[in-house]
Image 1 (cartoon, protein in one colour):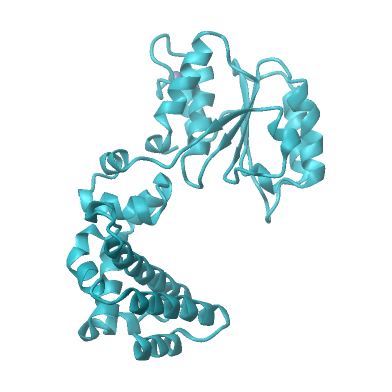
Image 2 (cartoon, rainbow, N blue to C red):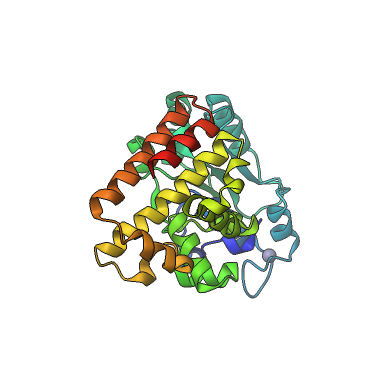
Length: 308
Ligand SMILES: [Zn+2]
């Protein structure tokens, strides 16, 4: 488990609930993808089972370590297989619920992305949510706020996860302010995704893409992008700087833009009229659409080159 993905605020909330014996039996974690919902749920599992007598979860006792490594017999994570969570998976989980705990104080069942449950699976879970087994905690997660599972939701305490703040992201990623700003806006504040991009040196990549699209002398880099997905990504990056230019023209302060490390280029782009910028934006969106219709990346690039 990646400890830095745990939402400390929410874990603290659970620590207080647990300490005062007010812990419910079923929770629905709602928040953007990669916001750390599963990691936090595992953190809660550690918290309620930790053997430490002081700060919980300690992360070092046998129970904490087993949960972190996915080897605790009483902590189970269920997620979609081939696109959905099926009734057999829920039946298996319910079977485990009936069993005595092997070693845990509280058995914890985590069901990820509940919106992928088949209707049958959801229905089979309802009774358990209503009449919980003792010493059992069920945590469901979903990225879809208005998930069409009202019956499930109404039986759970809803806990909301928010995109992480820029300051926290910067602290966690250990990046410069400009990088943290870019990663925050580009990923909608999803810490897991931002961290992944940071690890893959995405900032360097996005700047190569921008150099290629903004300066003809650097376009060799783009020509090497043979994979359609890479090219789509590069168009997405380009859209994001055009967006910055439009925002700058409408008076948005520079520190709120995405590419604060490339303000010179944003300002240059912003010298275009709104009409021109929107035309460029539309052209890029159209090119992305053409890629979906199977136009090859090289062709799409040359079309785009002619028009911008
Ligand atoms: Zn522990």
